[in-house]
Length: 132
Image (cartoon, rainbow, N blue to C red; front, side, top):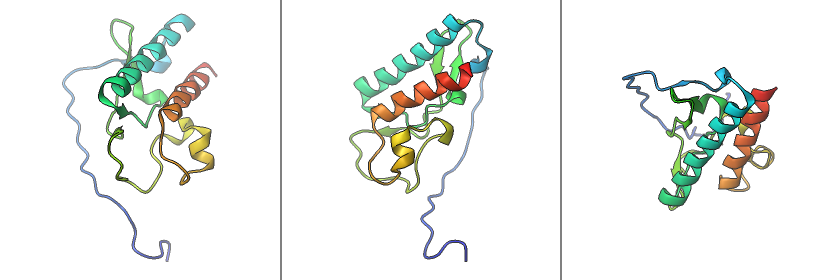
């Protein structure tokens, strides 16, 4: 048996509503300056969500940062986000795209909850990934 005991799987309903093209992938940046500006804009959006609404994104990745038509940055895909005032655990597995998860969460997946520092580190790994 591959999964002893009762599996703790939470069912979700997946849906998408696409009305228009939102932006281009992060990998289509035109210059290093533009890349840094787009990531900065996404970090500002993250900071505003955290400071003003007490929400953590928890899935910062290269696929979740877009370049808008005006060449600014967009942080998208907030479906894994969590309000900081909610203490109940929604899912028993680690959140995020593993290539960009903070080293602290990867090394100690059950030792602590996702913090703002983990999302900030994810922005760093996105930048390294895109530059390389």
